Picture (tube, rainbow, N blue to C red):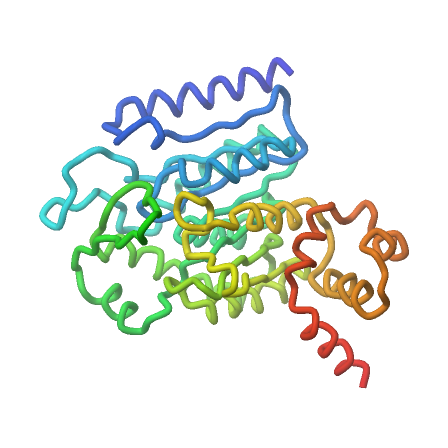
Length: 340
């Protein structure tokens, strides 16, 4: 208990000292630490999105903290700095992969003292970094939550612009929503994550191991190419059978920035529930579909199926929320097709 207290106090103090020396935009840009009184079974390490700040992950961090986890959301390199940023004076975002990768490795090492098992996650560029860690350090990671990983854009023209043109881009925030962090950036800063994402797709095809990953996307997401997210999942699940993939139906209108209501996602709690379902369960996606099939085709309750298959210790209540969202006819059709 004393060691844990000393470790957490030192980590917070050292982080605060580093960030105090930075001209941050406001206190919400500082790294977030939601820490229990003692070391927990699981600790979450979350990376916020490109140009955003740790404030973006506070709602889900609080949800996992309330569930008994330790949670750390560090400020990404070059992010959250105060300044009169514009096309003539763009924010000082890194333009090399290794800067983010060293940052990820540093924080992965730090949080291991805070929990027996490490859960990592991120949104968009932060998700790309989390995916890289899942392949780089699979033995150190219990689960990875990949929210809308940025591997490439949904538009080929935008891909070309990101790859080739060093222009300044300013975010367009939808009416009624807010945007955390910088208003804009130069394309080479975003190209870092596209290059990292393309490297990941190739690496996942040839790796021999990966941490279990849950790729979470949305049909409403117009920012990333979900076909490549599915390709990433298909490669990862061959390495690690406990990988999952789920895309929210367009009826929910969940945008790329899916972590908060403030950014335009009225269903943030659904995102949190499916994330907790993955972290709290220890089953393959095939087993999830089997539970769903038994409930739908045989009229059994979730609890009954779980007990019959001896899954009581391997699933958590939040899994029911995810099952309620699944495409039931598709699951039944796939099951019947295999049987015929």
